[in-house]
Length: 500
Image 1 (cartoon, rainbow, N blue to C red):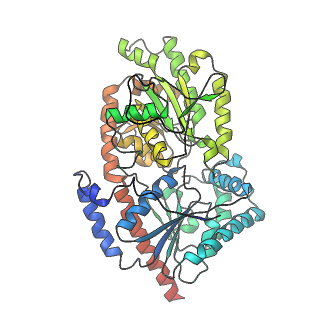
Image 2: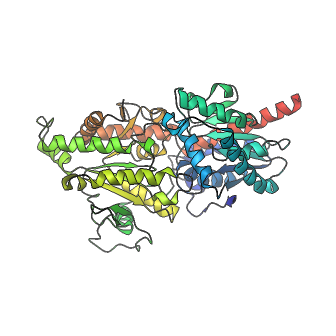
């Protein structure tokens, strides 16, 4: 069940490559200095454990983190838990939704649920235990492997960290129920780290810290794309017609677009290089606000066709609204093992799309992105984001939201929400716009109209967004924070052991 992953290093640049770029040279120098001071104290292997090797922000971050920590001299391994019991991932999805405050997920978590979490955790812990050394350190990501961490925390001297990437900045019946359920599991952990201080429950006060995620600027998802490379990726992925030959062959598994007859087929020409594009890329998750974003975009188009709120616009801006297309893109829902809700959400959107009149269907593209290759998937997302005029993350809840970080790095003005993870990054009216209510179609339509018809403001916001990511949310900052976390955890474990 448990699998030890060896990240492919072919696509991950070395620190020397970053240091050769004047934008990152000083950041690499500072990071190397911090690593030299930490190395003598982090003597064992650092184990990163999560629930999937593909799909989602954690799986995307870990290859770069593992590889660069190794280059800094640390011993780091990555393990992915598994289970043949579908009810386990149904339970952990419920826990995920409850941590986001969704009361409708069902707040009654039982002793049988706790037993299931611990049984799957114990089975995976039994497989990992033979690989553990006496000075190792365990980092468990999110709720799915919590049982594994609890089982292994019984080993004498093993420091354990729970890295939680999700949360909610308020307490309701759902969050109170799930934290009561998780507290006994977390009691055995040495420390915890959250993406925002608002997420830390009271019983972890004093044992938890804040660790912002970061992006790799040279990853396939974030690296600069030349015009020919961008067009080649679009053609290879099947989302752009080849008006001229391209150097590289088509991808083995192309992007699929939902068609008016309900089928999934290669999109062909979509106008990505020519039209104003409004884009959201995320998992197929109700918390991502897919339906209200679609409703808001359709409201904008209906108003434009009816001549509403456009009298003051120039002919060029009216044309922008007329030509604008909404692209909703997410992974093949059958490919994300730890998210059983994805298929249901995509089917709901499919039914909404099929009920639209042809004029609206032509303005909306629902895309299923292939997951057979992490590299090709990342390149497709990169190309789609670079084609966008406006990138949206309409999340009702968001642990952090790396899609926001990625778009900001690409100098886009982002339309986000007041979800904690998004507002931590995105400053309203400075780096983009924040909706007060992600379910309000009229508010979404108004923000989209403002961004689409204000190219100069979009450019200025995008420039400030790029600088903010450079200063706060790149992988160098994240690695530095991890080193601090390792040292603090080892100190706390050592202190508790000597006190005992």
